[in-house]
Image (cartoon, rainbow, N blue to C red; front, side, top):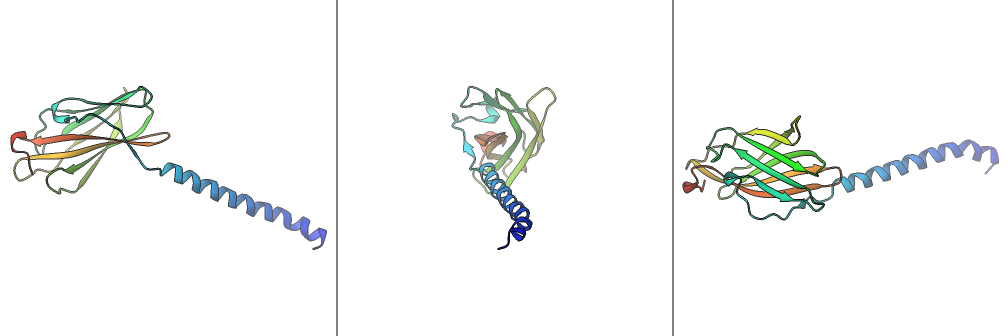
Length: 162
């Protein structure tokens, strides 16, 4: 190859190599962001019985509260997330029927100006008037996604079943 041709082609080759490098690094970053969520070990906690707190690895905590308690069936309730030493960027709740398939319900919690997150939630009514729900708090921090499982009964607890 002639030296003049090499000098003309070199900038184009370098640009193509740089673009390939950017694509590779970008795809690796997506893989890190898409890492599997980590389920936080927490003692069994019933949200309809009171606040539920989960300790974090570095000493902080997340505390989820629902009001009013007991949670009436088919009526809006407030879910509040308080936190300490946790860099939570996004928070949402997922609800699935424990004894009956009611589908998956997701509710994004909005940041509060005073700190923490909050949302008004309305879940569907069960024919029996009571429903047990598997509830997952999903929080995204700068480096990972964390899941904390809880239980919740809406409606009359003595008739819970779906």
